[in-house]
Figure (cartoon, rainbow, N blue to C red):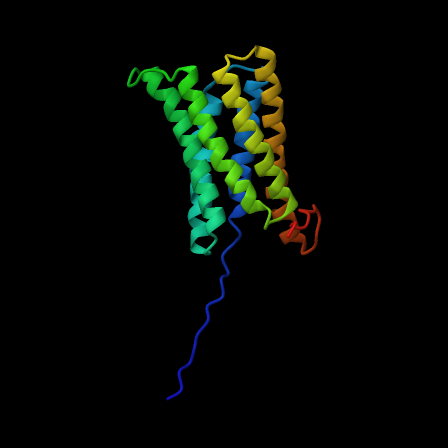
Length: 196
């Protein structure tokens, strides 16, 4: 008895640019605040909920459908990071919970730094652009944690903000490169080779 095998071709779009842009744009806007350009405001919170949060979760679910464990874990985790960060702020403002002190925030940020450092190791199997995104994000989380734990000066926090702006723009670049390279059918913006 002959058995026939049917293979389905995945024709869905690449969700990675959505996740990278949601992360990158939200990160730039928050770190412009950290660098001292403006106060924490509803624009940042809205971006954290809608684009940094919801869009990354959507991208993560789409990556899950494609069988991409790394991207699923990254996008859903960082989407929920943004939602949890906004929730930390809103719960305190509404009086539904005590505001997190500097030590608690340092622990929160350090845990995200550890997670990101391990995810960075995974990017060594991927392209150079993603390695830069995860390396700068690891540094950012640890700088933010150190800033909170040591009650660092405004200058240190502003410097951390500039590093965060670099991190965010690296993610924007990686996302837009994938969009343009696919549209033009050639390398318009290089992502760099993996270091395997």
